[in-house]
Structure formats: structure tokens, C-alpha cells
Length: 570
Image 1 (cartoon, helix red, strand yellow):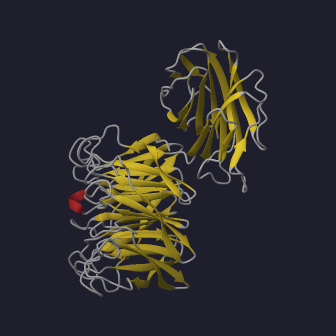
Image 2 (cartoon, rainbow, N blue to C red; image 1 turned 120 degrees about the vertical axis):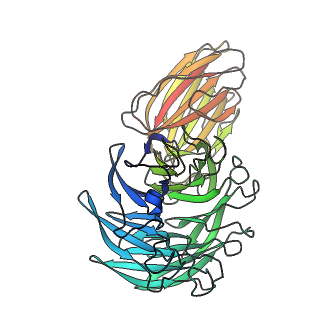
Image 3 (cartoon, rainbow, N blue to C red; image 1 turned 180 degrees about the vertical axis):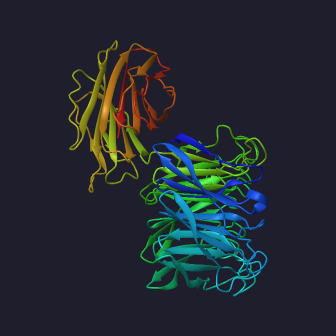
């Protein structure tokens, strides 16, 4: 994943203590951002729309009957031309009873369509602490509802017919717990909802499904290694058959460093697939307090708003990529370039398509805690895994490679001509030769789209006695090589040539090859995926069209002829 074309969003009427960015949600080219501190915590929400790569403010949303202390914007959710906004402390039904508001767009104009309050919401229920919207269905959390036990919590379901919203159901856990705060987090997709109760011992998440107009509890999700006060369920994301659940007080890496858990659904049963942690966190990082899932659940974003890379509580966001059922953290760790201690970057995290929003609601513009939100564009294509061989023509299929992925084989062959016969399905992209004191060496790149049935290993046939090294990498989100170029040099440095994709996006892969033994430096902007024998494979996700620029690497061995190949995958 590469954060690129980054935009910083600010409210047009920003003021101190607005806390803009406390909450956010995106649907396509429209986003809503909560600023619950606006005007003495009356609160507001701002709608931004994207044209091309530019986000501009379209509207400021306020409750028709808002008052100081309402916390309007505590939660936000968007679906098409409808926005749902929670105001957890609105006092129409008593102090801190709460309310939620629905706004709709006609053209470019937004107007309030409805004010929602649960039928039995009362004092200190905090209705609106969490909200989720999908089409004509809205779920609103009231985490301190007392119907079952004190602060056991509940979630209200509302549905829309025409312009009228009606309460459909009130959801509670089958095993309610006092101070469990069921409804602190909600994820909704179609007729399935996940509801967090993070203060129930180790924390739990409940899965509900709707049949007709009736909602029933489907399953209970809990961490396999959960400990008391991990706050499992503090944050939720749902995409396809996968769920991402934050546990910001998990202690695996350090005290309260945090974790996030991936669950996969089979029918009506959820099972833990992976636990995501990062060695790049530390004590009290708040890793997992906010989470987001991209696509069909193949990429996870985990906020760590108290990360200290840029100072105490400056914040960060981590990215993880799935290959099959395996998850691995990507190299890039997002921080704000202009970030400062106390910004809480990562305090809201939401994703739609290839767009990621990250809130930093304590960011100071000219005053104090006005807040900001960052919009990133990322490529869903990325490196999965790699296998290498030395002096062998047979290489294994990289772990986690899936049908539709692209295999890229980079070979160093010490023979002229190289006389390589690739396995079935592999296509030669580029062959670059270089002269050495012992004769020519060839750097060769092949690609192949992974099919539904692949062997466990591949053999590139070469004549007997020919020295060959192979790097076989698997990439997701790309299907072919669209541009390539090669170069040779005496050494010890060589520049992989610039290549120019005709359209934005893709992955730049460079293969550096040398006859002499030695390790390779990493070229500027690239990630080194392998460095074995005298060869190195490096890559970088790109998001723009135009020339990539030459990339230079140095070999530590005696210079004796080098070759380099650059390839663009799209």
C-alpha cells in the first residue's frame, strides 16, 4: 500500500476546540466528518465531495434543535445520499439521553429528514454513541441502556419507507452484562450487523442477522487469547465474510499496546483467522481503537492514535495485507508529515474503495484543537510473498498466492544465449545482458497470471551446467507487465532505467543482477524484497502516470558487470 495524492481536509469555519475529525465515513466520492466540539459541543458535521483528486466542502450539517453539550457528530455514517449523525448527549428525553439525525441530499443541497430517538431512551443512555447506516436501515447504539442491567447497552434499528423512519427493533445481547456497554461500536452490511460490548470482561462482539423484519443473534465473537480489560470490540469493521475487531488494551507487544483480530465467517459461524499486532507499537499506543477493512476484506487499517513516532500521542495508522488466510503488516506506517505531539492521528479511520480517511481531531491549525482529516489514495495492488533459489532452476510457488494474482520471475542466467525454457504460461517481459570477465550474464523477467490450479513449484529449463538464480514473487491487484526497460554497467552501481506507464497506478519492480558476489543497497523509494547471492528484487507501488525515474543501487562486491531491469505491473 502506498499513501499518495494525500489531501488535508479542514472545516471552512474552523475554530478552536472543534475536534473536527473525531468521526468520519466515506461512500464513493462523498465523505462526512464529525466535529462534535463545534460551538461549545453543540457539534457539527461536514460533507466533502471529490472531483478528480480534489476534496471540497459541500455542506455543513447541524441539528435543527441542537444545543451546547449535545455532542452532535459523536458518530457519523453515510450511505449514498443519506447521512446519519449521532448526538449522544442531546437532552430531549433527559440529560445525556441522546438522539440521532438523518440528512439527505438533493442535487448539492442537504436537508434534515428525520430526528430519531429510541422509544424508551432515557437519562444517561447516550443514544447515538455509535451509528451505522446501509441503505434504508439505520442502527444506533445506546451503550448505557439499563433495560437488562445497569449500562448493559442496546442497539435500536430504524428503517425508512419513503421519507418516514420507523423503529423496527431493539437489539440486546442474549447474555447481557452490567457495564458491558453493548452498542459501543456497530458495523452494518445488508442484513447482518456486528455490535461491540468491549467492557464485558475481555470484550465481546455479537453478530445479528435480519430475516424479514426480525433480528436474531447469530453468533458471539471473542478473542482466542482474550484477557480482562483488553477492550475487544472497541472498534469494528465488516467487509464481505470478514470482520476486523480492535482490542486497544491487548498486552502482547507491551502494556496496553493494542491488537486487532480478524474473524472469517462460514455460514452463520465466525472463527478467528488472525491476530494483528505490530512490533512498531509501544505501551499505550491505542493500536486497535479504530479499524477499517478495505475491499472484500483483504486489507486492514489499524489506527494507533497514541503512537509516539512523532512525539507523545502524535498517532499513526498501520496497514496489513491478506494472502489467503495469512496476514502480514506492510512496510508503510502512516504518520502525518506535519504531525505534532498530541494530534491523535488515527483517532478515526475509515475506507471506501481505494480511499482512506484518517482523523486527527486534536490537530492545531492556528488555534487549539481545531482538528483535521487526511485523505489518502492507495493502490489495492501489492506484494504478497516471494521465493528464491540459488544455483537451481526449480522454485516454489510463493505462499499465499491466489488465483488472479500475478507471478513475476526474475532470473540471472550466466550463459549466452541464455536458452531458457520457462514453465507453461510464463511470458518473457525483458532480457537484459551484461558483459563480465567470465562472459555475458542475462537478467530476465517473466510474468504469469495465477490460475485456479497451480503446481507447488516451477522449473525453468536451462542447459546442464548453466548457473541460474531465480526470484519468484506474487503480486495482487495487477494482471500484466505494461512497460519495461533494461540497462548494463560495469559497477559497482547501476541505475535501473525509468519506465513510463500510460495510465496511473501500478507497481514498479526492479531487478538488479551482478556476476560478483555482494549485497545490494536499496534504491530510493523502493522496498527490497530479496537479496540473495548477487541479485536483488525491489519494488514500489505507484499511483500516478508519467516517468518513474531511474533507480540506482550499489553492489558491495567487486565490480564485474551488472544488469538491471525495470518493469511496470498494472
